[in-house]
Length: 315
Image 1: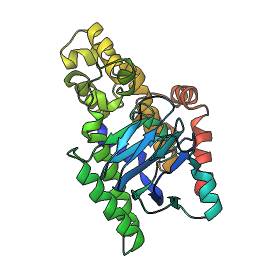
Image 2: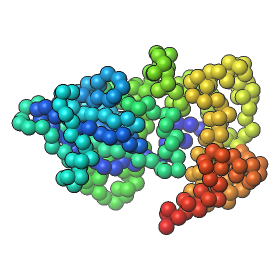
Image 3: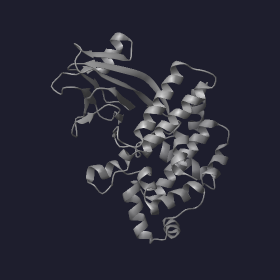
């Protein structure tokens, strides 16, 4: 059982809002704070990515950026230029292909779009991704990401039999490559900001102790795991395991297990193929009432209400 692939299957990544930005001379375009996960890669030229916090990020040809819009950001060739608002530009032209700047000097071409995920569990990304992932052209995964994006775009522009299936699988592969990239293998000991950014499932899977515990919990999600039992499985003391797991994964092992159980439960309830009692047993609860109490506390509504809402959305 691979916890990493389990997560990808639950997220069901797709890509929308394919667009292109052509800039010449001095220009800038700003993006508002939203709950989106945007991506772009530099097809030609150079520019900077600027956020309210942190140093500007220089983007060179064939660089790829994945950015959570938990804060606004700007793409520009000159920080002194007043950027144009991207949403205003799109609304005015009714087109996601933007043309910026004047003249013919220093042409820049950016391609990009937005990742969307299964709404039931998109919150799982919160503790997985840093707010910005910059995959430089020299990164070993860069060429694979660009190749997959080009294949996806070709399938989108010239659909054929099974295109929906092909696009879905390509987007899963793109996300996998991004998450496996060197840009996400930073040492969590590098500093407080980076330490906070690089916690979660990915960080846990790079540590031999926490990886063993994570694999066990995913393999037998209904098992009555305890901190002591997981520590024995990993061959370390209970106290050191608990501290290590929380430091690397960002939450305690039983907290993580409960979160994963709720994620699986939401996915099953949304599918509507199992009863609430069956889902309860599947994720490790011996009674529907205990499951309902835990689910309501974690999700904010009862399993019955969640399932009914999910069913209504599909009609």
